[in-house]
Image 1: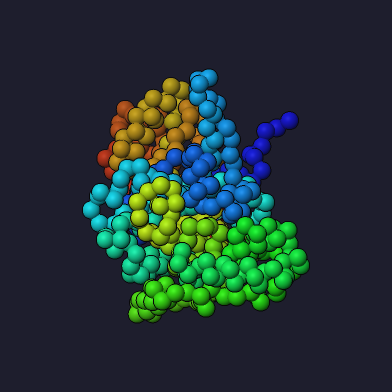
Image 2 (image 1 turned 90 degrees about the horizontal axis):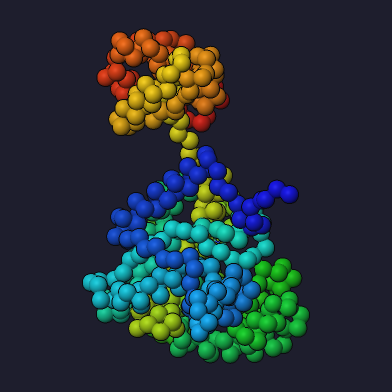
Length: 439
Ligand code: AMP
């Protein structure tokens, strides 16, 4: 039996990995412009972190986590329950608390890039190991962490990122989900409204109505949607501070020309969100069209034993981001080496390796052949790889220091000195994957 990648996971192969790198590169550039810095937290965390931070009644914690008992190291020790992180915000906030990051000046503006794990039903755009690029702004209220200016700045940064990466046809959906002060009244109204209709809804909704009625809005079952439409709306229940906060976020967005759509059904899947909640959808993605989601989580730090530390953040689904890119025009070209080195004749591998090293040291990318190849085979190999130029390294070339460089596109062959090679080989720019097929 052949061993395959685990269901819901996949290998990312070249040249697709080039698109991933480009997305990550664009993200890092934009994060730097907004003064965000990278944090890397472990993939394994104590299960309690997610139970308390994400919320036991969420689908993620209730049914999607990869959790296992670690082996106890000693008999006296209790086995610890560990979980592969299903998201990264809880890990970042844990690190904020563990390292007392509030003692550092200003707000903490942190970003991460990495895999997350959820045991969802796999389909296009939905995987069990998927990748997120996310960022968080967190800090004590005295540093301005509660300000609507932070929400608007994070949203603007996302728009910059989408634009820089070349994603088109996106839509920003926004809502306010209130806070610990005003949400209980809304929850109660929701509970009452659900009491009369819930037996017509799916089993998940029946459970949600009991445990956390707000989660009913996570329901994707088509038959339940008309019922969900009749439920009360959070907007009518916001208290004055939440209302003002949201109004100011919208005002800044309008002032900076950031388009948005209000969506009062948007609650997001996690318990720790307060006030601003948002999602960006993208036109080409089909059923799984949410390319990123985020929001404010003013109560999260306290929920996991930390000080008051309001924050706002988001997570981009990198898998979907890359899919949206390849659906548009911005398909990145794969890079092809500048030259192929063809050792000619027996025992020429060492001389070829020496030249390869010199060229690579001067930022010329090369693919190295083998002295067991005849010249014809070297040319054919270079051609298959889409490499336009072949440098022949035979005994004569090594002795004279003059190398024959064959251009496979026009068949011309020129002789040139070692010192000329880097210049000539770097010009013209690397061949793109589209021209590979022309060769
Ligand atoms: P969430 O952490 O649930 O707020 O999700 C943020 C973003 O991550 C979503 O908008 C998706 O783009 C992406 N995402 C979430 N779950 C998956 C998954 N199972 N497979 C691929 N992408 C996902």
